[in-house]
Image (cartoon, rainbow, N blue to C red; front, side, top):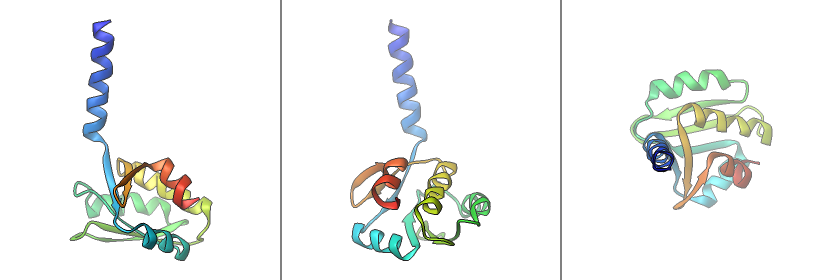
Length: 119
């Protein structure tokens, strides 16, 4: 029983150490950017410009990206601004090892972000 509890604790700690969080400062501007099809968020400092470019190249049928390395801000410009295309942003975030996105201090798991804002 002790080893089972230890295993659960170990995996919980490991998961929390490797998960990363993106952020959005202003909820209202974020919602407007979704409507406009030009969606921005701040990525963790551990995500490099090379990683953004590497992951983004797979999703060009859905969006293009620009990355401000100084601010760690990624901007997704949607090719077709519909819910199915915005769903692909979840794949990009997953490839970047981002598990949550904080919107004005409230954390959302990536799938919750889609259900709440991007859908």
